[in-house]
Length: 272
Image (cartoon, rainbow, N blue to C red; front, side, top):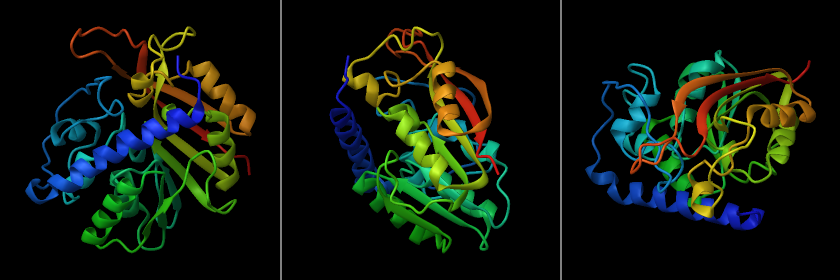
């Protein structure tokens, strides 16, 4: 079992940095996003996180037409397990923070919803992901999106400055979830809300795998929903809800759910 927090963070940073660099190098030959959708989502613990490794898999997570017009690079770099923008109910003028923003896909979808009167901040600790995200933003011409380097356990952001926090399969990667939720509570304005797509364990026994590679694959850091929501509650959140998305993760070579994890939607609110 991996217990050293710094080792976990460095491994995650290294693996996702390599993912971003791969996309940057391949970007000249990538095709634009199509609008076709397919069902389901795969997870291979040998890959970076539980998210898609290619355009086809990335498009399974989003609603019909959502990805049309977005850079192929932002879609290919996606490593999500859900669609947090779909459940956030974003409104024009809102201030949105995306934890672990990667290539920027959820930031760009959020920016379209909050409009020019709103703003979106993507927070990521991986320099190459930030490079990719900023390139994608500039290509799209968004003026209401910024990307900031930093860790979600110690956010370099002012208190009470966001209306909504979203995150897509990132909190499960953190070895210090109490710090993530405490910082999330701090930066949210009173009455602000948090909408997470994340990987949780299916039973109180937790994930069936705890090695280093499984941390990168979003499995080893998955917690049972009662443990996860208790952390949110201790941080000060209320109106906490957890809903399963019905996607269990497996080892693709064995086709078994030995990881004992699945994707969930988690919402909560900071009191007014």
